Image 1: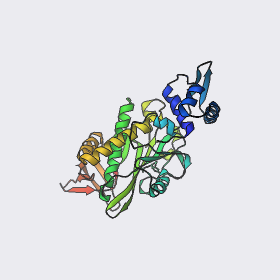
Image 2 (image 1 turned 120 degrees about the vertical axis):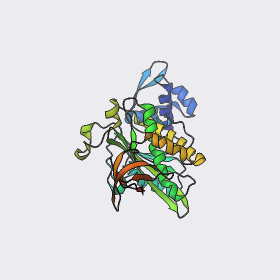
Image 3 (image 1 turned 45 degrees about the vertical axis):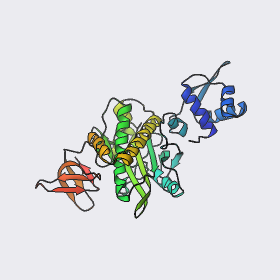
Image 4 (image 1 turned 180 degrees about the vertical axis):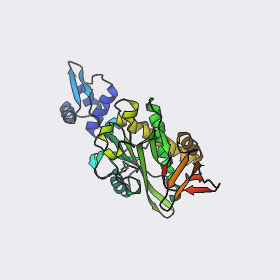
Length: 326
Ligand code: BTN
């Protein structure tokens, strides 16, 4: 990934883990003057990073703002493609809209767009998506898999598994689960939504735009009133303030791994992971589709990720898109 010089410097401080780095060392490493290093440190300080000067040793990073900037994300990344190109914005209308533009301009596989806040965040079914500044993960991952358009919805399931397993690997005080097809809940409250959009020709996917919205550091009172009984955040459930950049990187690490697994081995292993993480299968549910309301028992998903509901009369209905109540 090509980071700016300022971010290269920041990355080195993040990796230094509180150890001092001298101006001389940084200047040699990065091939620029010590004055240039000092100027970048000034800019970082203006952005909220603080450095202490240790005599004869250099600078140590003592505080960092809570941002999802590229250097922070990169310091936790272990991917080859996903997150190797990061478009970071303080504010935008919707990361989906920016991702559409970038995809059309030929963005590489795994490019991400991430913002501190969105002024017109989009949810499914054209609903607005609340994106409180600095409190959540509001990002779109552009992926370019060699698949047919009808396979696109499966990537929503790939993403859901990637997010649930990233959370399970980082946090210990709660168990997230998937509500079909694309919500992640904790104790019945929504903490994550996924919106997958596609740019395609009749027989070829050009790009999938996987929009991920995660409530991370909001406290209950910070949600709009109408969400206070149905939403939650990772921080509320874990009981700690959460490092958003670390969670972003853990998701990207998983998303690359599971997307590659899907391409090489097909949907079957993802289906197994999804069923393990699901809170829908085996439950009595009410599915509201655009055309009808279906009540019955969710018995599984098909190989293409379609939800199967068994009605009281034994008939099995396939549901492609719906709102689910459990
Ligand atoms: C849902 O309705 O549950 C899906 C919500 C998806 C929200 C995310 S936030 C990042 C990306 N940009 C958007 O405008 N929407 C998605």
